[in-house]
Amino acid sequence: MIPADSRTARMVQLMEQLAPVEGYNLCALDDIRFLRSNRPLTRTPVLYEPGIVILCQGRKRGYLGDNIYVYDAQHYLVVSVPVPFTMETDASALEPMLAVYMRLDLRLASELMMQVDEILGPSDALPKGMYASPMDDLLRASTLRFLEAMSRPGEAQILGPSLIREIYYRILTGEQGGSMRAALSRRGHFGKITRAIRKIHSCYHEHLDVETLAQEAGMSVPNFHLHFRNVTDSSPMQYLKSTRLHQARLLMLRHTLSASAAAFNVGYESASQFSREFKRMFGRTPQAEVEWMKATYALPEGVAVSGYVSSH
Image: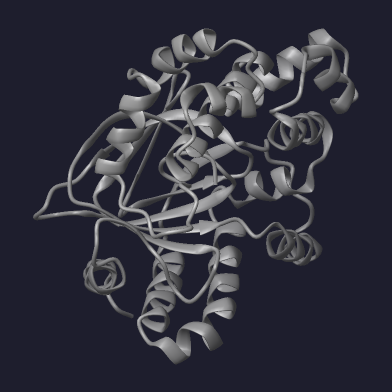
């Protein structure tokens, strides 16, 4: 068996090829991005979509309430519902942050979850919206095989999907796989809150209030407040505001909308209120934030900012 350190070194070597430029690097598979950062980033508000982040080099820390999630070459991150939090990166030109981002394929994950449940039985673990977990030897070996295939164009398209399936299986049966399987099952309060979160992300530009969201979840308002905070570490209205601000930032970046036009498009009635709340969240005016993002994140044309920056 190849030693873990040798595997990690080979993964870094492959990632240097797969992510040659800073920012987001595309590949043959639509739901995969190879990411590179040559500089450290201080705490930045982000909104992660459901996905898997595997770092081959560097370190990232996510802050959600009182919890700190560290993911590096020894730990991977799983996000099962969109979660707004703050993130910082340790990286340098000599040792860039190199990461694989996999947008969560819910169809594939659910199919595997049912197969695993048939063998191991349904998970009784607590579902989590986000968790960091140690990389074991099996997952590291699967990731290395995936990167080897992705470095060869023919293999990337032919073998890539089956190797992604293997990685999903390793995570679903790993140390905290039970939490992911429980989240995917959408049972109990977690499933009800997930319905409300889905409503927010599909209708953030509409008028939404707590009563509407609690009704979507099929819960009383007090219970909805309690369980929503348990899943997201945020109140429903704070979460809605964060989602609107992140989406407005994307609109300004990708479609060169003005701050007032972006505010209107995400459901704000007052441009001045939008600007105040935007600066409170991101620490910059809308215009300054867009300029900072253009200078900081290299993004292929037509690709949404996702994973490390904002909503996928």
